Amino acid sequence: MIPRYSRPDMTAIWSPETKFRIWYEIEAHACDAMANLGVIPTENAEAVWKAKDVEFDVARIDEIEAVTKHDVIAFLTHLAEIIGNDEARFVHQGMTSSDVLDTTFNIQLTRAADILIADLEGLLAALKRRALEHKDTVRIGRSHGIHAEPTTMGLTFARFYAEMDRNLSRMRDARAEIATGAISGAVGTFANIDLAVEEHVCDQMGLVPEPISTQVIPRDRHAAFFATLGVIASSIENIATEIRHMQRTEVLEAEEFFSAGQKGSSAMPHKRNPVLTENLTGLARLVRGMVVPAMENVALWHERDISHSSVERNIGPDATVTLDFALSRLTGVIEKLVVYPDNMLANMNKFRGLVMSQRVLLALTQAGVSREDSYKLVQRNAMKVWEEGKDFKEELLADPDVTAALSKEEIEEKFDLGYHTKHVDTIFARVFGD
Image (cartoon, rainbow, N blue to C red; front, side):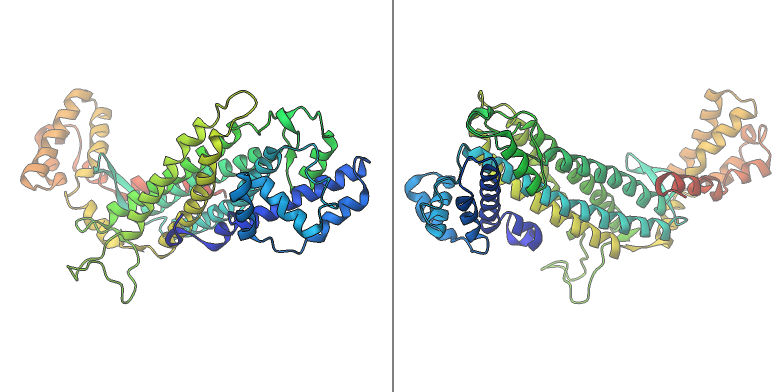
């Protein structure tokens, strides 16, 4: 991913230096395990650790790979240059390249998951704070983009909190599922390497052994991991879309913070555009676009092929780097979001009580009027508000068919705003706990 949409901690996980360091640690721990088993001399295993403080020369490894056309062999050749050919002669014994590549990839994904989990926790904290702040800030709820019934801005934030809390659980599950390693040799039979080597390497690298690998770790694990990233990205877009709607000029119930010196348009100096949430919408599309290739990687030929390799070299860093950036950006948007409670009330009252129609409908049915007739009575008065700009309550009070069933006091009571917010505390307790 380009630097514009990258953060350093996540980017570092995918650097060549980090990758080669992980490769080295896998090989060194494997040598330790083989020495403990008496398969290789202890002094050779100890010699491998001479490189533990060495900075591997990426350019030199690339130079060797240009000849060998094999990245793992190029690395092993460079390692031998550092510790000595004789000392390195037992490195990688009984192993295959995928033992190193797949185990490393899963280590990188678990480290990336740790950052994404922290990102989600930060976003949840911001959403909870804003939900509590605006628990009783009334705004109109919308269905199909049309005014429906009153809700609160706090419930909107709480809804997004609950969604992201589910995503946090999904991300933790995805991390657990991807945290496996395989040091099982060619086609995964352990024919030339002891199972204890795999157990030792995985223990040292924070993984658990893959129960059964072929020559690769099964890619359904990776498909589930990237699918989780795609779901989180979709939730980001869900929040971003709501904010973009609220910032529309004719709505203006909330807007992204507009800093001093910020410019909204090169042509129109008055503009204050929702550029951050629009950016988040685009980034969500990118992350989702990487899910299908991960799904298609599940079906590999026999015990292995490398059709998955080029895909993962791209989507591993790009999906995690992009989602990390997007979660951080969204957290900033939520923390600084400017909310306009007066505009929310003004928008809700724009159609002069129309949003209370369901309460009147229900009251009429409870008063003995059939549902069909009740609907007709309410709708004919509602249409006068839509078409003539009338006041809904006044029209109801002037309608003899309505007043024949409901008293003035009963009609007045149906316009009590508190009726729609009476369960906010209960909902908050369900979302956030007591």
